[in-house]
Image (cartoon, rainbow, N blue to C red; front, top):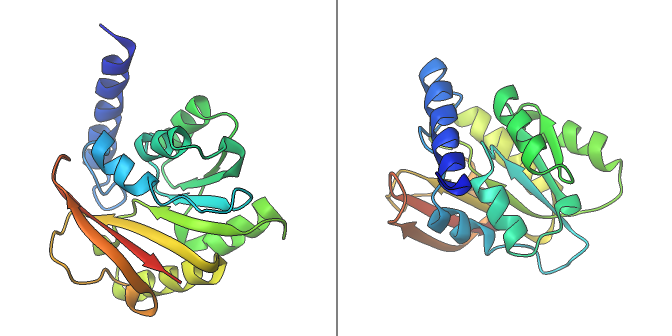
Length: 194
């Protein structure tokens, strides 16, 4: 069996196991499709020296698309709450900065990682915001806004296909919002600017 197919089956197995053990922590039962990952990765910062912060990367489908699109792994900081998935990410992307932690503490985690050196040009989020209480989502959005550089972008997907803004997005300008039909299930990718 080809390596790529085997890796996809392994990732799907990990997602399903983790979702069954804690469905509120793991917002998806399968990894993002290549189409969804590409739709998110196209929003890399234009400044090559800016960092990308990925929230809830899972086993790295979007991470791979970001690097494939030209992001230097050293410019990627990923925060994954699930220790098993964070371990997989470290093995696959040894030059990226993988943090096992809660995205709700991204301000502190980034401070420890960057130590005041560098700016974040884009936040790429696969977090299941619809599962979060409204106050938690608002607090998280405030932290995203605070760490983004001027004109920085927040890219968020959801399985809810309606056009209403996700929790926390009220203080951002909506740039675009499109449905990626070739994903299981289909997902809406919305891009917000600070």
